[in-house]
Length: 348
Ligand code: OGA
Ligand code: NI
Image (cartoon, rainbow, N blue to C red; front, side):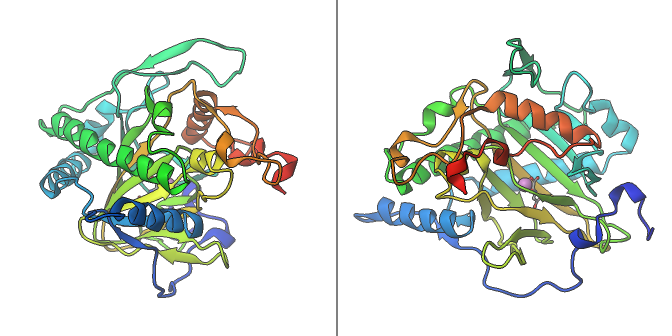
């Protein structure tokens, strides 16, 4: 079918439309603050974006541009290597970090290659999704030999973007009317990762997707995209797919599932996807900010009361994550685990 293998072909209703509408996109928020009330104003802009879209872009975020350019350069150099070379750093049964080119979203193959690295090395996670299995496994990063500066550059970049993620977490806490550090303890042994995404030109961009529609499972995603464009989010009001305009040196921030649960649905983890094109390759670099494996995710007590009961039952972040990670490898019969599975009757 078309120029791509059947495994990549989306169901007709999931395929991208040839022309997407032009709209005013998601908010662009300037993070430089000055004067009295600066922080409160910034937190309130962020809160509005989190309620309405679950997505926003930030400028003046503090991550050095020079570092971002260096990481973009090593990403390109890595994905330009011959496939045999890239596969030397391939993900395997025991270690999910490294290179892979067989990711599926909702059981259709994504038109992309990725390189994953843990922010914390080592990272601790449950050995299995089984709730009765208490074994914890230790994961370490796998690094390619080439380009030689890959490891150091990625590690340096991770540290800087992580700082931005913690800053955003504080602003989000403030925006919910909570102390700035309310959510910080959940990230003492954070389990997040940095991903380099490479979307090669696709001969049938009308049939395949770079990443199929999904919500990010963690707390927060901080994403750098290049100037090609392709990320789209699903507008809550009408379900329309809205493109996110590339802005040089900005970061795209999105609320992920755990924050939707902590906020008891005040903030939305919005559905998004990536469309590809037949001419240009595209790169993007998300940092997925995830809590410690032992964190039990549930609506924050301060946001729950009799009029507004908890909309989710508590779940273990580590077990949820491990369940999900398994489902990215291969086509599974069942739909993978979603936070909807933890909804309480009050959420209807
Ligand atoms: C993801 C994702 C968007 C992009 O990797 O979860 O949504 O623009 N990526 O690459
Ligand atoms: Ni995503």
